[in-house]
Amino acid sequence: MTSLHVRGVRASYGPTEVLHGIDLVVPSGSTTAILGPSGCGKTTLLRVVTGFQTPTAGSVALDDETVAGDGSWTPPERRRIGYVAQEGNLFPHLSIAANVAFGLPRSERKDTARISQLLELLGLDAGLMGRRPDQLSGGQQQRVAIARALAPRPRLVVLDEPFSSLDTGLRAATREAVAEALHHERVTVVLVTHDQAEALSFADQVAIMHDGHLAQVGTPLQVYGAPADRRSARFLGEAQFVSGVVQGHQVDSDLGVLELDETAPEGRVDVLVRPEQIRLTREDGGLRARVVSTTYFGHDALVSLDLVGPDGSAGRRVVARVNGSEAWAAGTPVAVQVVGAVRAFPDDATADG
Ligand SMILES: Nc1ncnc2c1ncn2[C@@H]1O[C@H](COP(=O)(O)OP(=O)(O)OP(=O)(O)O)[C@@H](O)[C@H]1O
Figure 1 (tube, rainbow, N blue to C red):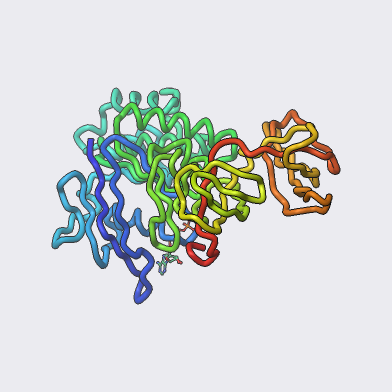
Figure 2: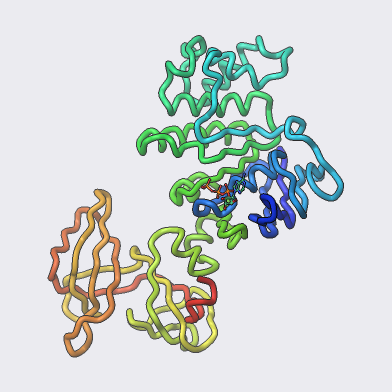
């Protein structure tokens, strides 16, 4: 097992710098998801790690072996990094067995035991070995691509949006099978995605990238529950901000007096309240609101509400996430309660976007 160390990496296309000093450690045998909007530099970081791009500053090391930077350079084919692209890129003219074997050293390419073990590991029937890629579903093709990447026992596996071309049901099943196989092989993994649910469910660690910077690196719970800035909060799940004033461990906000998750400087703040933190009841009293509309998703629903002021006037709009089986018709008067501690950010909207 191998750990990945990215230190102060900068990278450019011509005169334009797109990575502005990336620091990231992926511990041995763990999975890190790099999550960020299109164009933020995720693929460029993968290119630097795999060796298809030279950093203009900083270094990349696998354990204590520097493969780029600090005067060292190991070409991609000698880094022992397995790479899986969005479309898998299987060789169309080769059988499934030959595709997987392609990853093995020439002397081991006839090792059918290793090939069937890998296919089995990815939940693929050994009977598929003789087929060609176009005779498999998209999900099966991606599993074969992962098997091919794992075949030579790489030090690191890099997955660039490997599930994004699959439809929703197939994506979840493929992701689960791949996660299990990677875990079984105890390989270190970097996954690039712009799918929040994928990053949170697949990875031990999530790195949030914006404009060539890592805004935050932490466990899925940390990055979702305690985002470093407003932009990361908005990028990961639904985020709404209400104004408030910090008083000790509490904040007096548009949604009442709420507990803070950590101490914040006294004064005006914006308070992050996730929709699932807002509970609705039909009781009279408490903080009053009126249902504006409901968007139904099956397992849950988002309910838009206008808070009602003491004089009965409509106040600010907030959104609550409720169980999909609950029906909240437009116009229904409700009582609103915020559950759990909330996070405060300085109220200067320009502070972190
Ligand atoms: N070959 C290139 N030449 C010039 N600029 C490039 C090149 N490849 C990427 N860029 C630019 O570098 C920036 C980062 O691109 P990159 O592909 O790393 O982002 P990304 O986060 O992977 O995006 P996506 O999720 O859309 O794949 C973007 O502004 C992009 O336009």
